[in-house]
Structures are given as C-alpha cells and as structure tokens.
Length: 124
Length: 132
View 1 (cartoon, rainbow over the protein chains, first blue to last red):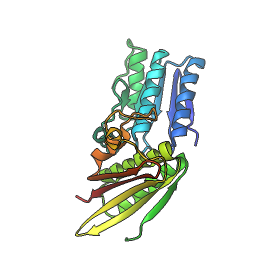
View 2 (cartoon, one colour):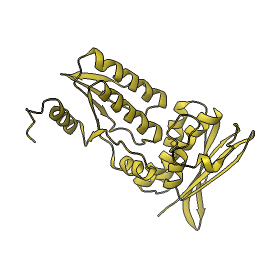
View 3 (cartoon, each protein chain N blue to C red):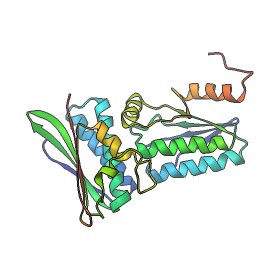
View 4 (cartoon, chains in turn purple, green):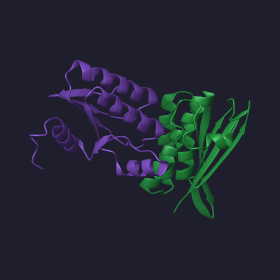
C-alpha cells in the first residue's frame, strides 16, 4: 500500500487511503523527509482521516516524521485524527506533542498558510 | 456469536487483519464505536509485540458471555519469553527500540490484562473488555 503524495503549490499532501502496515508508515516517513528537499516544499500535510487505529507505532512514526521535516525547515500538519482515535491515543498515553494538528485538510492548509505567509492570512 | 476467531501473526499485514477482525467481533457484540477502537488498538499493540519479540504467533478473539458480555483477546507466541514482566510493563521500557508504551498502554485501555511468560517457552497475553 503506497500513500499518494500530491504536490499543491509549495505544499506536499500525503493522503492515506487505507490501513497502513508499520513498513508502509516508515516508508511514508522516509519518502516525505526526502521529497521536501527536492521540491522546495514549504509545508507538508499528512491526512490520517481514514485511519481507524493509531497505535503506539503509528503515533511515534507520525511524530518522528513531523519533527524530522521540521529540522529540515519545513512545517508539517497532521489532519483528520478521528474522535475515537484521539480518545484512544489519550487513554494510551500517546501524544503528538510539538506537532501541529488540524481538524481537516482545509484547516490544515489554512494553518500552513499562517506559518509560511504570516502577512497574508486566509480569512476564516 | 460464540465462535472464536484466530489470526496467525507472521508479518505486518497480519496486525491489520487481526485488529480489523477484532473490531468486527466487537461491533457484533454491540460495543460502542469508542470501545471498538480501544479494542482494535489493543489488538494492534499485542500483535506487534508478537512480531517484535517472537516473529510469529497468533491472536485469538473470543466473545465472552457469563452473566456480563465482553471480549477476550489472547496473543500467544512460542518465542523467547519475557525475562522480567514488571519491567516490560513499565512505561518507556523497551528492548526493541520502540516507545515502550505498547504494553503499559494496552493495560490502561482494557479492563483486564494478564501476561504469562516463560523464558524459552513463549508468552501469552490475555486482555478483556466488558461491555458498559
């Protein structure tokens, strides 16, 4: 299962389509960390709306992905964490501390716009 | 629904199969969607534990009806066993470079949690969740 990564302007949008194995998630992390350097990316969105489970491995991998990309100077926003998944993460003691999250793709794009073009915020 | 479901765990995709089947059983038993997610997440953690430490094993999902109704998940392997169970259940402890939150977290999200492990023989983790 490969995750399609679309380029929209200066942003990369990784839109997860189905449940991912640990290997798939690790591969997505490597691919995004690599691609941000090649495409003059200003921001990355990882859309996890379809994930019905985010266990300790998934949360750690997503957090590492965002932090690694941040070290390269690019912002990442995780969008679409489902309510049950968020509840389960809290109960498990897992957090995405230091990682931006947004309700959905639209809010995620707005957040990236704020980060990357602070003078030109979108009206909301 | 009284039959049990067995899913062999040998590769990463089997973790997904196990948690999807576990969720389906939980749904049939009438667990709330929040509880279904907790159950599926617990299965994911114990199934990964099999892959990390024993490479192969199986997940058994069993409906429970004895006055109250619930679900039992058994993760069984014949791997190396866990030398120090208390250590394995400590937050942040891991011998596999993982976060070390899998088992302690699983214990928190389920109602009952037992580990039986014998070095050289294998490990059986049994977790239960009762319907509210």
